[in-house]
Length: 197
Image (cartoon, rainbow, N blue to C red; front, side, top):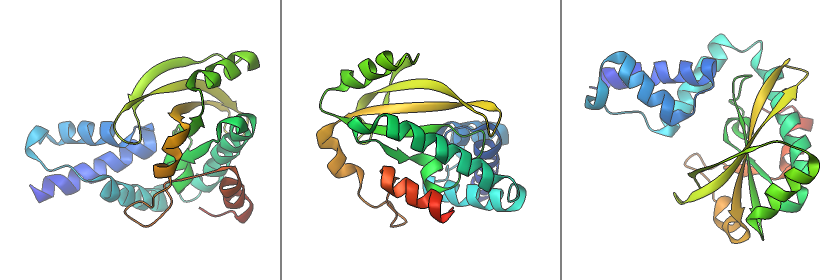
């Protein structure tokens, strides 16, 4: 079954990079493609992230840095617009594994969750609301919009996950690799200015 796991990991990494799938969906689709179904052990997120990094280094090294910068600049713009909600960037755009197919995920930490929706309405921004699993597994509202990237010449998905203000405490605990799982506006600005992956 370990050979299935290696194959699933490789296929899932390609799906994440080339189709912009989230890790869970990519792993399930990869398992189905190998014919392993529920028999194989799926890679954990850390294993898949390492495979994504390898895939990018091999197949996207010439295009990915510019795509990542464009996505980070969009994220910074929206974080500045939504500064009152203490935005933090997470996911592939924060960790440096995003490509033009990746969506942007911002976590907002609010005194009043509905205030973020009202702010978007006041800005004239159209959005869809859905519930998604949050930081601790509980359902949170995700406000999803599409923003245009002139640099990439396509629309990018931007998802604003709305949390209570108190949730910010646990949101900054280091991940399994010892990294901060998300960063605020200043941290993102430093990444962009340093041209850091």
